[in-house]
Image (cartoon, rainbow, N blue to C red; front, side):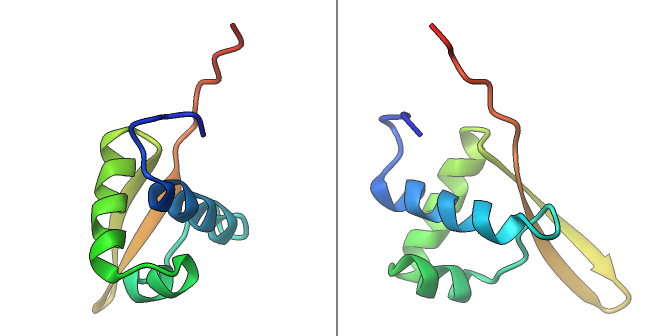
Length: 83
């Protein structure tokens, strides 16, 4: 990722989400789990998720299954500039 507007925490979190989403096509880890994996505070995870979503790197959906609401984080297709 060569987006200078993202922090190192954002990039590290994106890598963790990418790896966790490889099996199911999405990541369903909680902020607490992402915090532990990324070695940052939960507040930092909140900010990073919002930045990644606003920049179009991820998409967050909430899916209700019976009485449970699951958050799913999808990696968005990124256009690579080959110039």
